[in-house]
Structure formats: structure tokens, C-alpha cells
Image (cartoon, rainbow, N blue to C red; front, side):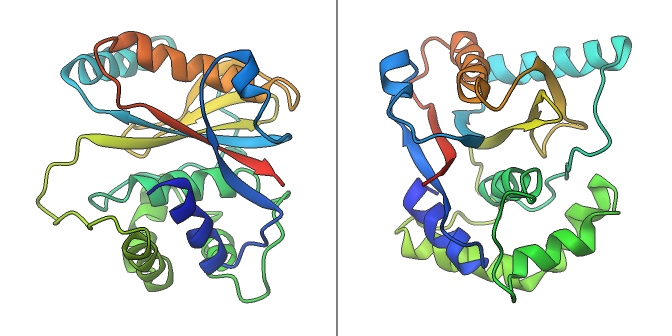
Length: 220
């Protein structure tokens, strides 16, 4: 899903268009200055490679051994639906900024978030599997965006994650991982630059890869 597809997706889910996804054209300061502020979330699209999977396993083992601080207010869910990482990324972005969003009265996403707030990450994933309104909206948006929906058995090697600021800490939210990743302190003013530094680390791990793309959830 490109950012125009996300635009339609947000609208269909009942979110007022005062926050929109915009392209991040590059990671240099002059290109970041083109992104409308404030920014409350960044979605990164990146390739799942052998190098990344090795890193992911090592990172998980390291955090399990050393521990990390994750605020209880972080909304995190697992991904159990194939090829739904864009939808999970969008839910993570909106859920952790729901106080900033202006939801329509009958918003299906607002209802999903209210219903799932007290659930575990695994329960939220199961609930999404049965939540027809979001699944149908995702599929229709994908078709409108002229992206052919992959079959359920097709191996997809591109993946979305969300980067958000919760309580002054920058969290990476990836439904394939067992928990959020705390990347340290951030602020409303420095969030975009801090999030892009995390994105750069993904790129540095796979320097031969070119399939990286970032979009920002900005006030417009």
C-alpha cells in the first residue's frame, strides 16, 4: 500500500483528514524539512532478507536476556493474518496517537480500538481476524490502489513497521516480533529525525538493498 492507498484507507475507516500520510522523499535534513509537522508516526517499508532475519533473532534474544522498559500505554498487537503488515502498521500508528485523531461517529477503527484496548497483543490479533469492517476496507483500498492482492500462500518479502512516540520514548512496533522495541528517548519536536535514524539502521544492515520507503503521519 502506497501513501495514496493509506489516504483512502484512513478515510474509509472513519478518520478525519486533518492527519494524513505523506511521502518522506529522503533522509537528508533538507528533504526531511519538506515533511509537514508535527509528525506523530512513521511507517517504514523494508525487505525481509536473510541478514535482517538473523538480526531479528539476535535482537530478540538480547532483549529477553537484558530486558527493556516498555510503557503499559503502548498499544501493540501481533500479526496473524498473512500479508496484512500495512494494516497492522496503520493500526499501530493510529492506536498510539488516538488522542490526536478526530474520528467520525461511526468509525470502524475507533470501535475496534475501544473494543481491543484491554486485550493482549495476541487477543487483538485474533479479534482483527474476525473484524470484517477493517478487513473488507483493507481489501477494497488495495484494489483501488491497483495493487494486486497476494494469495494467502504467496511469500511476501516486503514488510511494514510503525515507529511511534509514546510517553517520550520511540517504539518500533512490528507484529512479527514478540514485543515492542524501545529505541530510546524522543520528543514531539525531534520525533521525525529520531525515527529516521532508526530507519537508517535498517538500511545500513542491508546496504545492497534499495527497497526501502518511509511515510509519515503528519498534521496537514
